[in-house]
Length: 228
Image (cartoon, rainbow, N blue to C red):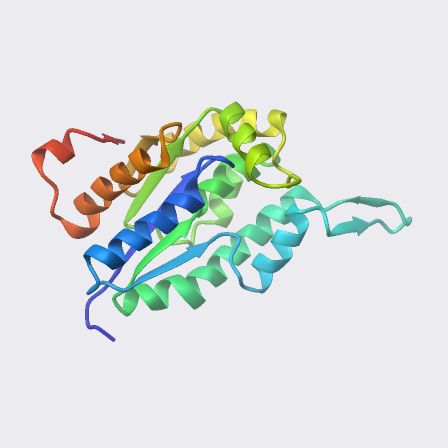
């Protein structure tokens, strides 16, 4: 134990927005420039038992069968509950122990992904309610991209799609993300243009982390970013 509390940073965005890339780039830079602050990279769905099941559902490898023997997709509201359960397990077993031990924990997705994606099958208020015990991060960074850009990136970088990776669904999720950011903040939120090069985005991610986590920002830094 270091005796000091660490930090919890979340990077959010539509599929194809570059969240995974930016999480890794942030961790690499932090380890290089501030080796005194240990960094852990994580993601949701998590690697825990509920998260592993969710990943199989998202890939379409888990379906359900009715009492009449009819095969059908996994219920989307039940999936929302699984996401909430995975999140609490993620917090209890990984995020909170590391933060309390003085680590910087950087997560690829968190509550706002549920608010955006699961609210398309259930009221956003209900999704927020089932996630009410998830503690807010110290910093939330949102990578904004049009859904068409995200889908084109997904198609160009990996084979196949998950169940949410359709143009119709991502178009609705794009709007839902904006509503989620407006209605359920409870933490510092920095909005970045995710359509730029990964290097340009990474630089602004670093500026945001300097302001909130490292407390070393300049006046130029503070005027550079879009905070809500």
